[in-house]
Image 1 (cartoon, rainbow, N blue to C red):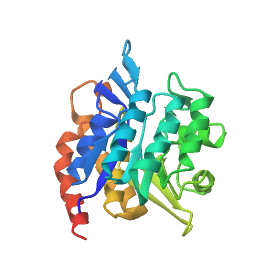
Image 2: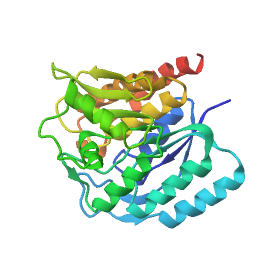
Image 3: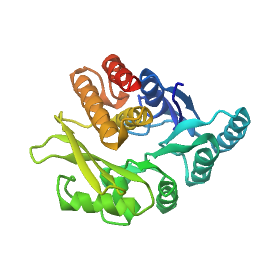
Length: 285
């Protein structure tokens, strides 16, 4: 039977991120992707000014209540940007009420980057995300989000291979998630990727691809969506991390070559064909 995912993210009308990234990527993997939107924005908040913002907290609760009556639980719930701390409870209820027993709750604790929280977020969002992470099968913070979750100062240097990164991974696992992926980790030779940790087996691993210069909005959502698709298809922690790093690197390369303002998001569409073929191999296993 076809696997099913519910993506719990905002809708940004312009600027590829969140649901406008998650829905096509997960669908390209052959996984049914339903959505529960957390907010409606005219654009994402990175690099744009004057954007509109409408939180959908009440609608999230109504949608969840209706979907429960359908009796069609999902194999995974993938949460990302939440519009306010008030939505933490709604996200937890989605995991509790709309996911199969033994399903995967994949939480991207979207809160900040570059050492600071996103506009409009404060300690209430950090506390709420910490609670949500305790409900998760896998959490996928960047180093800024990891630092806030752990109540630590954000490192001045990017995370790299070694004890410091592995200590962060283990501390994050202590929040209650069954597995941890830390994004934006660097190799000793300057490649970029992710580190993962499985508390059950005590296994730590790294996956890297070539880094392309620049900063690209939306790549975290590209990574999280590809990871969710692969993990739901049974790739496991290491396999899903590898699939996500490889796909994200391909997307960043395409984006770096595109003559467009980078705030409009990652050029992921041309990479979907190769990703779909890779995921088709997983579906045959």
